[in-house]
Amino acid sequence: MSTHRLFLFAALLVVVALVVVACGPSATPTPAAAPTKGPAPASTVAATPGAAAPGKVGSPESGKAVFEANCNGCHPGGNKGNGPDIRGKSADVVKNKVRNGGGGMPQFSQSQISDQQLTDVAAYVNSLK
Ligand code: HEC
Image (cartoon, rainbow, N blue to C red):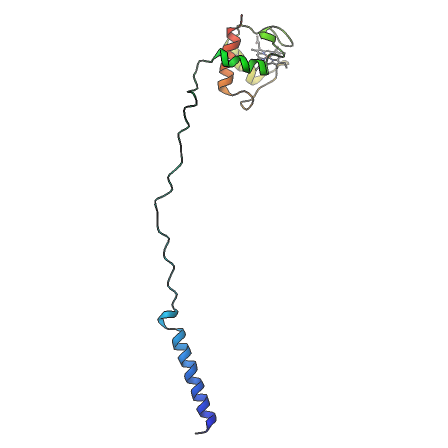
């Protein structure tokens, strides 16, 4: 046997040894631990704190400020100005006019005057004499 063949044989052994090691059990990657199923995140549906319990009845006191900020320029003190005299108008008439506008009266959206503020301002207008 020539040294050349011996060398080949040795090389073959090395290769076989490497393959065996590479494919051994230690080479099998262990799957990462499955994510533990923790409790589902508690739903944060916090009940909106009863924002002063929006009452159906408006507050003329709160409405006064809303009126002065948005209406007084045309209905000074509820009297005739650029707009007509609206003192004592019913809440329905006021709410309707404020939301719909028309005839020179501007329209106010909920982002400008909230429903609660509208209820309040209507009560205020209705209380004017
Ligand atoms: C830019 C001026 C202007 C502003 C601001 C204004 N109004 Fe008027 N308003 C008018 C005019 C003009 C009319 C008459 C419209 C018509 O003849 O249809 C009117 C009409 C009304 C009427 C109807 C009266 C009726 O007999 O039907 C009500 C109620 C009223 N306004 C309430 C309000 C309130 C409440 C605000 C504030 C949130 C307000 N207005 C802000 C000009 C204004």
